Length: 408
Image (cartoon, helix red, strand yellow):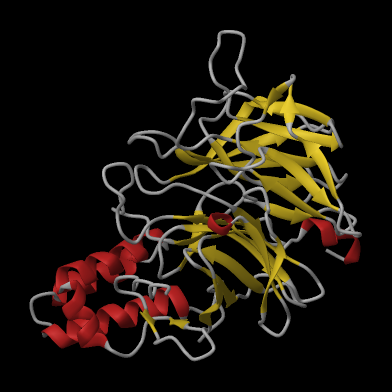
């Protein structure tokens, strides 16, 4: 039995599970008083103000809130709070999420990651805990694509439509990057560097030349790590694959613990999610590096785009055709003592390619891990979080690297 997702305080209600196993996340609306009772007025208004501040609307509304705070009845405060959330997060004319859009839970498994959409209508994603790759077909039916999967985590399709998998989802993983050929055979692209085993390949990205970039962090047990520098310091790096067995390390210590990756459409930048959750005050940041034509980075160009502080940091990411990054991050409920939930709730953080938060798309469940664009118009954002694969319709058109030859 799968637990129902927790509500995102102040912003949503999750409908009861339907017989088909599909539930909906409805943006702020109806049950104002019940919502305020569950939060408390103070917490509701704090949540509203945080969203207004992050969307540059705090000054516009803050005076009115302060002026009326003692004269508004309990119900009026609740109505006002949810009204503001509706206007600012979901109903604004320039919102990324389509008006009246619902976040839809497509399917549920144990622990989801690495979504990859295919024009056939299939969405592939990892079920790491059950050691398998799943396929949700165009009818919504769920199938097992590969089992065992080597604890596959991040995935993408290459320029020839072959599925590339980072088989490094923790204990028992194959510690390698593979490619599933069209006939179903599996080609190992990388399993060692310098004759030593990789850590746990986590996520991957691709440039216009078809070169694959992958992150190789190590979460939890570090006793069997073999990637070391000349001083014996452990390396959690980022690598480039030019062909099967042709691997180059392009980042060694320039970030703390690399996770999600993306390459800009023009191949000029590499974006790296840096997410160390072993202790407080570690990196939970999004970086940008200049990417050279040869596929290496210029360390001196490292630019901080966003910092989640001690809240849960960035995981996987997608990109739209404007170059904006859609980054999975945040918690609705703290994971003490390592990860707080003081400011950044679980959701997709839309960030400009040169930094700056555009909007947050809330998700009503913790352990949000990754996202990708799909569907015929590339305006559906598929999100992996908790036990489920979710989707939401947006006003943004996704950039899907392997479809660049189809007018992307």
